[in-house]
Image (cartoon, rainbow, N blue to C red; front, side, top):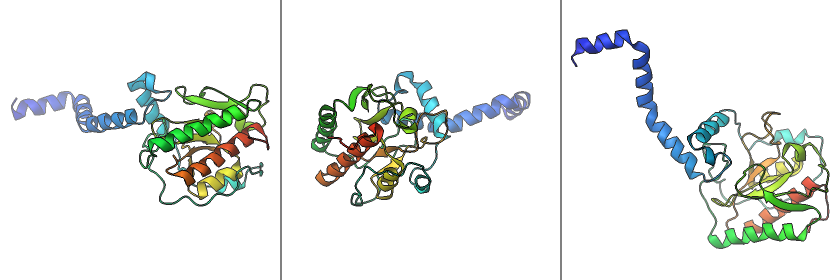
Length: 245
């Protein structure tokens, strides 16, 4: 096609030409971003395929930063369940670009530590049959979730907004999502053990309280012990109990 014909085409179809140019430039980003979404593993959006990715990208636009803690000081609930742990060593793990699913993407634990974490989760479910039980995670919809026992009324707004789910483990990276009290959320984030979900506390239309946190995967015995204490603190807060076994 000679230059004259190209100029005539652009003149007659400027909108089509612009859209084609945008598509040509944006296609590599779209493909790359979709592959990054898939690499985060299964989630409630996974069965939707490309539509799930579009939803994830859209939700990410509404996310916020994840490590500030000033808001927790203003909360009406002042109680603590988490004994102040030591500061976590090293930098925080990186998390994926997408806020759904919310996953860490480096500094993974060994298979042995991952097995121990799962065993700890199951141990506390078995030891507290009157407080908690497991079911399909109301948030993830692909993994077991620890929830408040049906016989226990929701003790606070966080339990209602959090769909009564206490915690779940992500099989791909072995991080956890938990809900902590405001004071415990501040401690866990400030000492480097967790970060807030980007959508937590963003809108009343999203059932994620501000204490909905990603707890980083433990890397050794010391970190495993702290993560267990965080899990127990979440169980105590969400069931309003001081006798979690």
